[in-house]
Image (cartoon, rainbow, N blue to C red):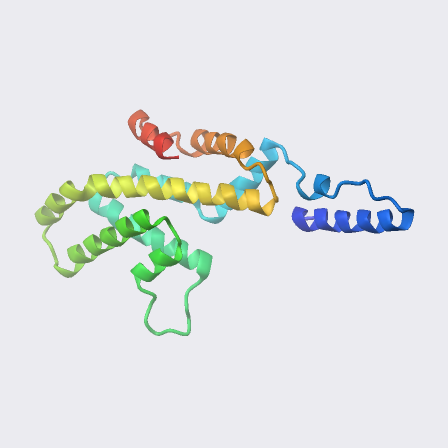
Length: 206
C-alpha cells in the first residue's frame, strides 16, 4: 500500500520523463503532475491527520474547564506537552527545558509568544509566592480575559500552521483555493462547543 503520496507523484513524474526521452516526446507538461490539485475532501482528510498529530481535540477540550486556576495550569501544561511531542525531551540534560525556551521553539507569532511568556510568569508567581485562594481568584479575575484571548489566538495559529503544512506537503500553488474551506471545516468540526460570542471571536481572528 502506498502511504507517501508526494513521493509516489515524484516517482510517476520520473517515469514519465524517461518515457518522453525514449519516445522523443517533449510536450507532456511536468507542471500538470507536480502541481496537481487535490479535492477539498482529500485536503481536509490530510488536515485532520495533522490536527490529530498535535492533539487538537484536547486543545479544544480546555474550553470546557470553568475553574480559572485549573484552566491556567492545563493551558501551560498543554503548551509544554506540545513542545515535547513535536521536538522531544532532551534526555541528555539533567535540567528540564524551561518554558520560555519551549514557547519560543514552537514558533508562534511574536505577539502571541510574548503573551504566552507573560501567562507563564503569572502561573509561576502564583506557585512560588504561595498565594492564598482569594489572592489567586482576584489575580485571575483581572487577567483571565487576556489568558482566554491568548488561548483563542493559539488555537487559530495551530490550525493555520497545519493548513499551510498540508498545502506545502502537497505542493499546492493556489493555497487560497483551499484555506477558506479548510478553516470552515475546522470550525464546523472542532468548535461546536464554543458559545456564539466566542465562536465569533475565533472566526474574526482566523
